[in-house]
Structure formats: structure tokens, C-alpha cells
Image (cartoon, rainbow, N blue to C red; front, top):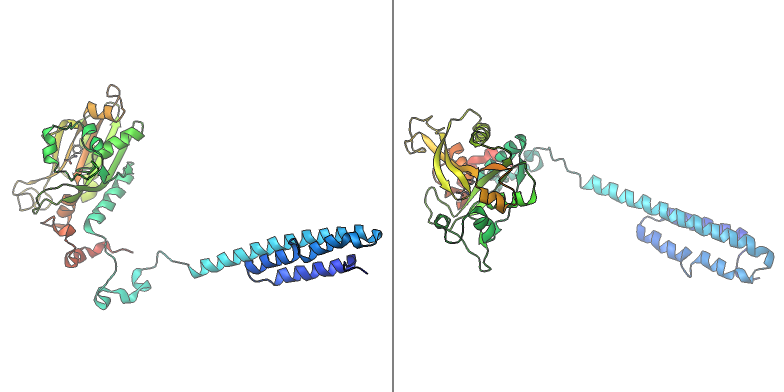
Length: 361
Ligand code: PHE
């Protein structure tokens, strides 16, 4: 008698292997069975290797049974692995389940500010205004874009029609980096990036942080926020600019706002304007916020200069556009009656907690 079993014993081996696979509770255990039964020196492989020593009439049936057993064990292993994997994922989903709609107080009742001194997260008033602006712009059908804080001279100045010796650079106190780049002094470089990556018509805004290396006072910070708007289409005129901004500001202040344009100068727009809104604090009769003028200066705007369109790869013979740059911090100050911009970055929690309306959650 050789050590190789007849086909009846192959059936027994097959049953033993299948039972072991079925009983395995981890993927590692299943893989161990795969090598113990099917591997090069596995038990079913042994049967096939011993076939040559069998009497000739047994070789066919035993070989066939052993090959079938291998196939069956292989298939059982795959099924078992898939079952274990999905059980594992199901357990994970049960364990890590989160209800994002659950009120924070129910999730972390002990996290009330007075109890722990740590409190729940607050949305900074400028971030709250920024989110609101983005929502409004999206609802107006505008694309909301982003741009880098670290810019190169070309995007921040040259492409915006501000060559190196242009006096407008004096008003952009610039933080230069050692590698020759700079911290963007306004969001207008996003205009260039937008035109370079899109074909008109373009209707987009970008809101974000800007940096000016300048003396601080109640209305000047060295880091603040702007909302840049850029529209490019055929036959764009100042009427489009005014109606878009009236709609936008009406949404922000949730009422009709009266606006006026004053002639101004920016190298990247022609004509250029400052847009004022009728003071929402006093209604125009004169107060500290509007410095008794009845009007508050909110943004710079104008029709995009042909040189800027060209720098963005757009032909000014076919296309025209308008752009605006709105001071988000100033808007936030008007909304909440904040008198000093320096509060925003001072990190005083007593100041920030007054805007708890913007609770995270
Ligand atoms: N970039 C200008 C500034 O920071 C504002 C502006 C943007 C003016 C777009 C006109 C058009 O002062």
C-alpha cells in the first residue's frame, strides 16, 4: 500500500478542508488553510504528487477527485474571505456610526463653556461672513474659486497692469519673501488665474486672506479679507456691475441697499470706481460708522482694463468684463457694529464669544 489514499479518502480530505474553512473566523486563519491544503506542500497537493505510485486503474479517479477537491476548497476559501471582510466592514460601520444632525449639546453635554473652560467651537465672525458670501454667490449662479496666498510678482502686479515702477505699488505695502515671491496684497491675482484657466463667459468670485505690510489702526490690519468678483462676457457695461453688486449687497444685508459710485483709479480697471452704500447703522443721517457722511465705502470696482484681459489670454476686441474687490472685514464690522478691525485677529475669546450665533454644529 502506498501513502496515497484512494478516491474515497480524497472525499474525506475534501470534507475536512471545507469544514476547516467554514470554521475559520479570521482572514489570516483562512490564508493559513490555503497554504496548508493547496500550497506546494499542502495536503491535497500531496495526493496529486503521490498519484504515480497508485495502481494504474486508480490514477484517473483519484486525480480527478483531488483536482475537484482543490477547486472546491479554493472556491470555499474565496467565499469565506469575502464573508469575513463584509462582516468586518459591517462591524466598523456600526462602531463608527455618526449622526451629523445630532445637536452638539446632546453629544457633549459637559462641553458647555462654563463647565470645562474649553467650550464648543465658534465660527469667527469673519469666517461666518465669508461663508455667507460664498452661499449667496453660489445662489446667484457664480463660481466660487480660490487662489494662493503666496503669489508671484507677475500675478499680483504685472499682469494687473502695475509694472515695477508704477506708483500704485506704493499703496500695496508688500511682504516680500526671500525667494522673490510675495504675500498677495489683494485677491485680484485670482482674476488672472481665472481668465487663464477658463473661457468666457466667466462669472466667478474668490474670497480669501490678503496681506499688507502697513501700520495698524482701527481700520487697518496687516492681514484682512477680500471678496474678488470677475465677470467676462460680450458687451459688459457699468450697469451690469451696479446691478450685480446691488443684488449681492441686498442679500448680505437682507434689504434694499442704496449704492453710489465715485470715480476712482485702479490700474487694472478702466473706468474705476469706489462703491459706497448708504450707512445701514444710521440710515444716512450721519453717525460714527459713516464718519457723519451718511455713506460707507465698501469696495473698489470697474471695467476690466484691456491689458488685463490680454494678460489673462482673453481678446479685448471680443470680450469685456467687470471686477470688484470687497473688504470682507469691513462688511463684517458693519454687520455687527464692530468699531475696531484689530479685534478680529487679537484672539480675545471674550470678543469672539459675542458671535456665538455662529456655533459650530
Ligand atoms: N484689488 C483692489 C484693492 O485691493 C480692489 C479692486 C478689485 C478694485 C477689483 C477694482 C477691481 O484695492
